[in-house]
Amino acid sequence: MKKIIIAACMALLGCGSVFAQQGKQAIGGNLSYGTEIESVGIGLKYQYNITDQIRIEPSMNYFFKNDGLSMFDINANIHYLFPIASNISLYPLVLLVR
Image (tube, rainbow, N blue to C red; front, side, top):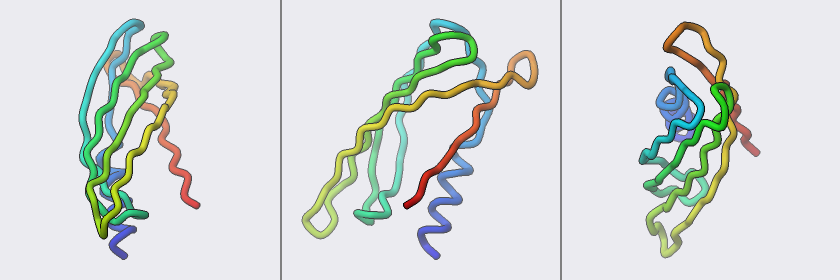
């Protein structure tokens, strides 16, 4: 149950609107929870708009020690932005769970 609540909260935090223009850049931080290590983590991400519709986002997360283990995670995402209004674009988020 705890994992479902955490996943739902993370999905809600990931929903939002964005406005993108070619060449725009952004840096951000995040707070996360690693279900495999069962520990809180902090992260850093960088976004760069290649075109008005395509954005790349490398990110990294560090999960604090729990039972003597810590974890470091590196990711890279590509977003395709769908404009829905003049200043609002959405991008789909796909979550793969094994």
